[in-house]
Image (cartoon, rainbow, N blue to C red; front, side, top):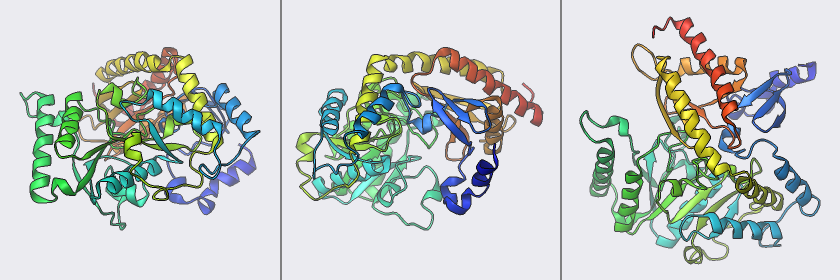
Length: 438
């Protein structure tokens, strides 16, 4: 790494806010392509993060790059509504064809947090009710509205006092008592949690919406039973409350379908989508039916940059690639293969607890091999060792005990094998360090 690079990296906290600049692992890169990052150190790294579940069709996919270049030759900025342009209209039409149920009308923004903010505003505006119910462990963004429904980590809310929401437990099949059916247990608990909430803290006719990640993301990649989400749909219908899905991380093929709502066969009233929509270009959408969106009058919500023409062109190319390269099926097939391989690896490595997976959204729990407790320190040592071997993972979980494995949907079984071989070497090095006995 040359002097200029070294100087920039060493002094980045003087120019970049440390709240973000000090994320892990801070790998200096000069290029990205497909499933790989190319480091400033001259090394090539297999990427199992997809820019945190964003570059679903791989880094710099040629078709996406070409669409960006072509659109940039014509248009660089909207704003939508002041002018109108082909890429945003085409994208809305195409998204309407792949969305679940009757979700066919879109408010385009720039980020997942914006999409969530829009969903909360829409639900409150239409119902004229003040409160939202969300789930403990959920992550929905860091802007104040999105933060009010985020509870994956208490540090996100510290000193900020976000208001207007109530949180109840997410589905935790691992907490079912011995001898109990885990699926029946979490469904029963969900009903009890709603009953308690409505009896003691808020009445149903004050609640505008229930917001949920169909698979818990930053909170630890917890995969609920279908029956739990179906019961949630029933409870919302019973009390005339909008069901809102945050599919920012689960959307655009990550679970093996276009959206997790299709994987779990539950259709919400409102959705927030982002991340994989444009493969790294800033774009998101709040989605609902035309009938619902018509109740959100002109001027009640607006944007300057949302639905940028270049980002929309990239999103149209993303849809092309997912369809042409059959990436939904690849996510199912390769995701199942990766999960099976990880279960095999788990048998030989006592620092691995649970492995949770749906499609190419995989969580690997790291534990103390003696106590079984979450092991954040060990997790970062494993991540660092894996990176030294040439593969990049990310972290998650309330206690930073989950390794997130979220490769691009273009990943092959051969690349899974290569990455997991590097991962297993990292496990072996850490277990040797702590003297773990199998």
